[in-house]
Image (cartoon, rainbow, N blue to C red; front, side):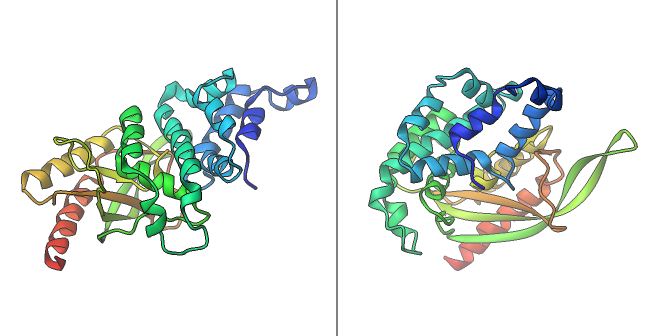
Length: 282
């Protein structure tokens, strides 16, 4: 069942009765668990709440969250040290943009080209500047918010390969690291027009489903190093970004935080293969 933004706000507020307080004596733990469900790539509760607001043309609620008019709205956006603050704002701003553009797209078509054309790159660039996130991610997020089904732009070319993901697990009250086999998929995406200003590097960004998945402790550095390597080799084609996704081979959900540099080699090899294949394909 899809939650609305109002329902998310109500669920966040402390229990109202003494009996509920006894059930939820660990209020911080309750909120943390609920917040994780908001951002989980499986549940995506915050994303679906934003899409619901678009469907209902509820601009007032979206703007209330953007302006953080209620303390609980600010608490949710800034929870866990505000580590995902700009991802939340990107969802809200892209939802407002989707609401503006929904009348120009045909909801009955399976062809996303008409929807893509209806989303101005200039507006996406404005959102990207505020949030510090790639324009391509803002485009894909807006398109998903516009459509019942994913209508993300089709890639020019794609490349998949196997990599090793390191996951932290608790065993006998000790935190241990385990290797998890995962499929990394890289997609070559046209940047759109107008282009971001000259000097902006082509971007490597995740699919919207993984937007809230945090990357830490070596993972961002692995992404950056892979990009630097292929740029240094002159392989990255101008006018294209790369969108990535990651799926565990055992079918289990990804951890809430991707850590370590174990996928650095997979990113570098995958990018080199992607660009080489694209060259061959023309």
